Image: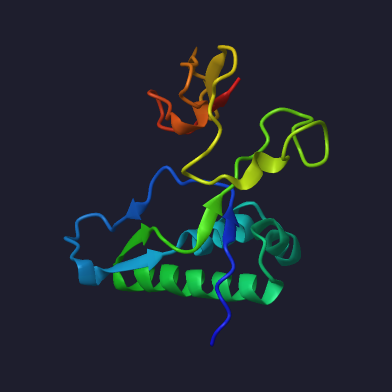
Length: 166
């Protein structure tokens, strides 16, 4: 019996999950599916430029597994670019982890579970505290935070970037 797949930690929810070549009609056969784990591996290694060992620890997987994810993701992206296929980002065995927003909210400081508690999509932060402002991470747009609706679940009405509590 094979080992169960370890749940990968994903720190970033992409705002856009589908890319396609301009001017080409896409059918289900002309697309490549990147899992959230592969997307996160590419983001950490190639975009954030984090070395493989640290990136693997951040995702809660072994270094060889991280390497296999990188190879698989790069092969799929190359296939899409060379053959004019669309890229869909979805699925995989993962859980969303909320990044600390304020200094001092990291691991081991103060009370709580640290680093977001790993509650994933279903039970995330509840935003039941006192009112505040939600701020865009890209264009600094601000709007009042609505009780019971976390800022991280909103997108900026101006640029579409994720918002954070500010």
